[in-house]
Length: 122
Image 1 (cartoon, rainbow, N blue to C red):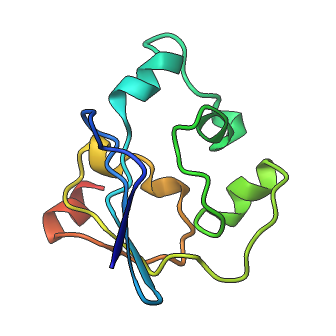
Image 2 (image 1 turned 180 degrees about the horizontal axis):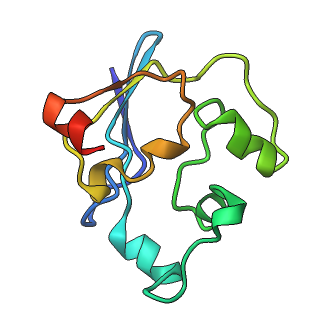
């Protein structure tokens, strides 16, 4: 088994942990790092909506992993689209922003598992 941390280490929030075992790849959470987000954005300076996830990718707020992001958002960035998602699922611990904020960027074919309360809160 291999664990890769793309956030949530020595910081509050930003939990994005990739668990890999043989050919199974599952993300535990896919959240926002408040400190890294705060370096670029504030109350009056927000990411550009028309840019999709572009500002997040350019600022290093989301991991640069091929095959996990939505096709429409990749096309906005002029990036190639992969035939199959590169991860098998996302397991959300709960629906706070530091654990789930960036789930909307993920390929819609990737199943997201969470509690019923978290599903209703989304």
